[in-house]
Amino acid sequence: MIVKTAEFVTSAVNPTQYPPPDYPEFAFAGRSNVGKSSLINKLVNRKRLVKTSNTPGRTQLINFFLINGNLSFVDLPGYGYARVPVAVKKQWGPMVETYLASRTTLMGVVVLVDIRRVPRQEELDLIQWLDDHQRPYRIVVTKADKLSHNKQSRPLRLIAEQFACAREELLLFSAKTGQGLEPLWRALNAMMKIPL
Ligand code: GDP
Image (cartoon, rainbow, N blue to C red):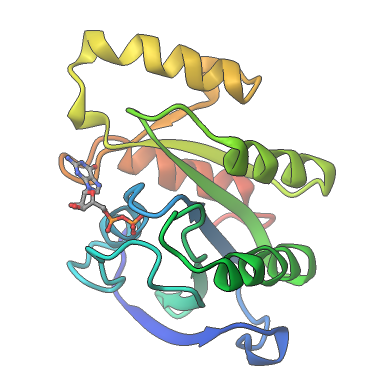
């Protein structure tokens, strides 16, 4: 996939603030620090379209980006960060759930999990919710480069077990090496009703 343009469109909390539903859209979800900004930047071949943050959990808005003038990417706020105040945590659920339930142009959700962490309840709840609401999704295992090839099998098996999916369904990704970039673009394409 050749990305010629990638631009920030707007931040939103409520549906009234979403951009018009003009383009097929993909949303990216994951715990803070999972490597979500790095993954989106890598996908669109930009250094800092999405700001990587050293203070996880600061971005509590839904951010919309327009890719090549005809594809929309949505950066959902990172969840499960302990230092986020309770009031913010309470807002996260409804804000994200409203988005996932109501966005008519949403083609799929990319759910990110760190290869070195066992998925927690938030991730499992999100996948359950997506299953229940028949929203297509793909699970991407990030920071693959942090483990050597032969150290990857055990965590991958555990992650697959937790999500009750086949190991082959997990997409391995590294923003550092670019591993998994093409397979992820192919997976996005496969979720589109009209392929790019
Ligand atoms: P976000 O909070 O989910 O948006 O995570 P970021 O993209 O800001 O990444 C969090 C930290 O992990 C940063 O220090 C990144 O440099 C690092 N990181 C992200 N992706 C990778 C990766 O694929 N490999 C390695 N080694 N580090 C990564």
